[in-house]
Image 1 (tube, rainbow, N blue to C red):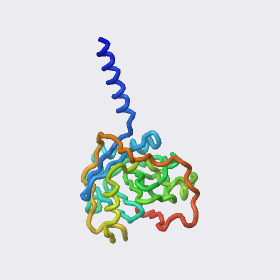
Image 2: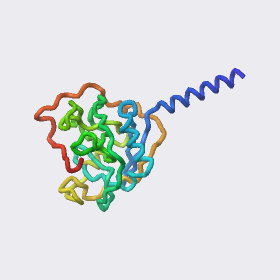
Image 3: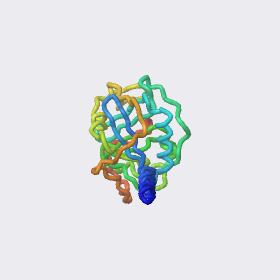
Image 4: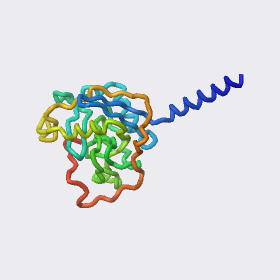
Length: 220
């Protein structure tokens, strides 16, 4: 009887730990696989929105339509024929959560309106301070970080290094050879020891020389 109680307690402990763990999502592309850890404690609405798109299969068959080496790779909206996939209602911007747009972080793309993010996301290939939240104004609200690459950063960099040109409705930054998200799904596993959580310190204030790239309002 005592042994059964101990085993029951251990089972409950493991179940609680499993529920408390951050969600892990595996993305399969035609150039390799990338795994994300999501942070629902920091960006609950953004994570819930992203997981809804994952669960309904929205991302399957979409492109990385904007890739800029040493800056970002962006996708999740267009088919290989540049048809825009229907999306859900926009979500509130949670960029003021303390997470920075650092190398390897996962963030939501959007239009000029801070609360216009739907399905498009991007992976930061470098520390992009000018994309961080600075103050509640459309020019300075920033882009919400809600996760981080924990494996497959080499694949993300490979995607970013693809030759680009004009494509579909875009005048530049579209991979010449399509980079396709073949599947995206929740997965199980453990976070690698060297996969550090993104910093939660206050971001630096914007300056005149914060980036070599300007934000592209056309792409979101």
